[in-house]
Image (cartoon, rainbow, N blue to C red; front, top):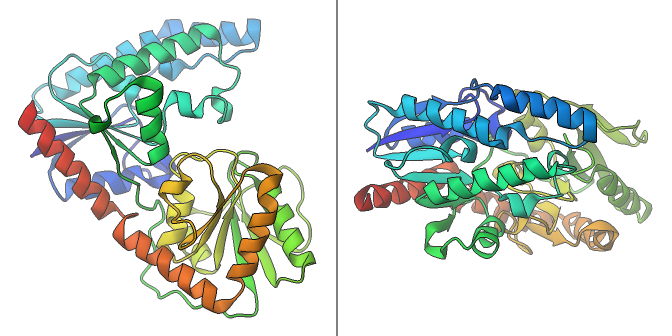
Length: 368
């Protein structure tokens, strides 16, 4: 089978889409003949560049160039030219609605995504304060992309439910296929929990959205209650951290596997999460996860087995503290760590993801 793999990011860049794109194209490439089409170099249409600047200056609102009609038309023309002569049976589009919206009818498209505009509206900073003209264009582009899509491979039930309830997409067109990790574990065996301290990790590149302050408060309460908790923060917090917290700052992706393996629990009290790749990374390294029940987290964490899901906001502080208390007991931690590794092995890995996407592709090719 011949597939066209369309990516708005460079597929060789380790950080593309939280690090999942290189793993996606590699796994698909082991199962099909793949032509990679990268669209990241396609510049915005001149009119969109002008509108982005003028709307920002005059209104203070955001104009989403990547979701604007003229730029989407430009990207669609580029993709159509790139597909000429490719003889692709199916197109696998990675979060590329802006690329396929104006693609002429023909080769079936499988769209891979972790969210919908309706699901993330207001949750992510880039989607706040968007100008009305830009919202209309984004909705128009997304609608055309949905109509051009044969089937969707989404990362969570949350995304699937939004496609069905918010947009009326038929349920048999949407398959939930969770992503594998962006940080793949090394070959070195993970050491067991030492039983003396619970080494808690917070990965918060986007401090506010990832709930950095909430995680620190829960860890503070745990220590005040006498729990043997040590906290490490990866990311750049907006203010100096207390002395009892180990602040790692920004960590190179090549070093993150070592960081995960040096800790026992991932604490992620995020306000919003779509694909939740850090949680998938954690499970791949045998870390139970304590996370807020938001977005796609329930499709990653097997609540009560591989981790705990807690309410958002201050209502979640108590349950998160209880979860830390439970995981501070070595036997409990070992059971949850084993379940996390099992979940990675059975569901949250790229072989499973690619096998299921290939099943969708073969079905689309047969029915085309």
